[in-house]
Length: 484
Ligand code: MN
Image: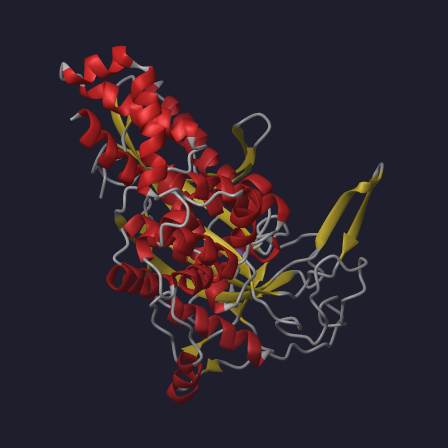
């Protein structure tokens, strides 16, 4: 693993990070009630008596949600526990009418697993998964509806969450970013969570501590509820720096929960240290132990798609791509499918260059998704074919692509209409070369004195004269013959 160090006043420091991600399970009903879960509904329209914590109501486990959590566990290469239990975690929050959250504590559904991070330099970094447990979400307090009042919206109350806890294996903000991105990718491949951080379907708590390189673990602070990859990376950086400053000034880091203020770029203390016993966990007497059998797990395993890691390995082997390009292409299922459909029957590397280069560049610039792009797989394939069979040059292909993106028209039509076909006709090119040679005796003399750079200048002149349409190979041949 690449060593990431921070130079402090008194020597080097290492960051230690563990992440707890709350991922909302894609399910139309809640974890223990049949109420709907759709995002953005009118407040308090998706609330059953169970979700409102009415006395005497009994929770009933949603089988589909359990299946989704098992599927996720399999996707994280994790152990699925045949028996797990639901417990009550006591809180007082205005938006938690039950007075407790039903969660899993001592016996979670999913045990240890691994996520592999794809770093930009092609390095693959394993990060351990400690556990995955199921729990219900709380409601939401709305403080901005009316001055002096707080409103409560219980639509989210009881929504099924998976809390995915990593081991403290993450050593830099970049790795934390890569972890979230990879987890998001796996959840989306599995279709168990939409991974939408802006809508809160994926929320991240960050445990940060610092230590001397390879020393023992330092005291950690938890930064709560950070909701974008960029903010997670920033929060780790500023929190680690804060802790380093505290220690270097002779103080001690106090274990506490903190909030990240993205506007000020700082973390602030929210509340003091809390430990498991503060929640008074105990098994929920309304719910039986959750037992899952091997047959059901096997059945779920049969529904698993090819996951990003396996796809990446296949792309490297079958298409001869580099690790980084393969990682980029498989990050989303749509993108991987798009690549494969363009690459079918074409040169895989040329295709990868076009997809990760010009095509992704255009998508990013336009800020749109693959599904809304004006150029589809067949159209991009046609453009690559025109280039591969020599009809157009690589330089012209870039212009044609831009034109396709703007107009939504096909490559062949644009090439035809604008007369962009590459000139490979030797006689035609020879005439142009002859003219340029006779017009520039000084440069000819330079070439004959052995100045190779001027040869390139001649190629450039021919390209200019043909509007970039000359076949560069043919031009080089002719020039070599005339001047060499
Ligand atoms: Mn939780």
